[in-house]
Length: 422
Image 1 (cartoon, rainbow, N blue to C red):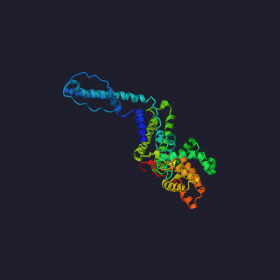
Image 2 (cartoon, rainbow, N blue to C red):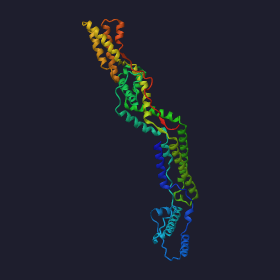
Image 3 (tube, rainbow, N blue to C red):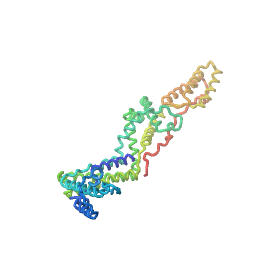
């Protein structure tokens, strides 16, 4: 919500800069009633008490002094010097500058009674778009998903592990690779499995599925937060009031949107107060609620949820992962058998195939490599059977591979989607 704080500050600053957010008063009042005559009379009394006689010339304020005078703010007295006629005259100069500024401000106030006052632009929609409202994140989600799918993703995985993915990035990589593998085998899949794979068959459909799942997760998280719902409803209500009040203001003819029109002044002041309330609600949401979306956790969880059914389909295919220790034992046994029976070609073939399977061991595999291991293992078992070995021996020597992990859950925690107070 740091972004929301910035938006609230920007909106508030621009509104204050453009309109000062000061309530209008019909006909002018307050500091505008100060006249230069009183100041001049006061100065004459000061001159009589001091016995001095000098000609006083009215000076026009410049810079910050003029700005302060025009807004009715009396500048702080300057430091008084002990020498120099200029410094001794500082109080007089200040009084004249303030009086001159007051006259200028009074003139502006009088002109504004006849000149139309512009109606500020609404702020409700801007503040509402900054609050945790799911539809506003649609474009952000799409862009992040495109970026994630376009980046280099892991290609090799610990398929032998009970949980073959140990990070969110691996989940993305395994999802994409599994889909590519299954698309080439659609005729071999059941109708239900084929429909699921076909629905994710290209990048566009995969992006769409990931976006829908991420949005669903985000909606669920936001529903769980009563504070988010409270601020959303409150801003929505205030925004509607702002729209209604602005419509009433704009229905007043432009030449009647002046300070002399009490009805316009009342509506205008209510409008400014409503805008201030909207920005205050936004500021409270940013400061007190502190809602923040962890986009990486959101996208990783969405990928994991899509990976689960795809992985279930993949597990029903012929995939295998080498077991190194079992392969080492089988290699020693086969080597001894082949040495004793050099005329048995099937033993030599089984030994050769087992060596190839051994080459896939000790490292992470791609899905395609796992399928190649399964193919080699089928040929290896056939060679053992044709070598005339006992069924128990064949079974013992054939137990050198395992199925990929079951993916019961993720081997990593994606963390919370919504961060901040609940």
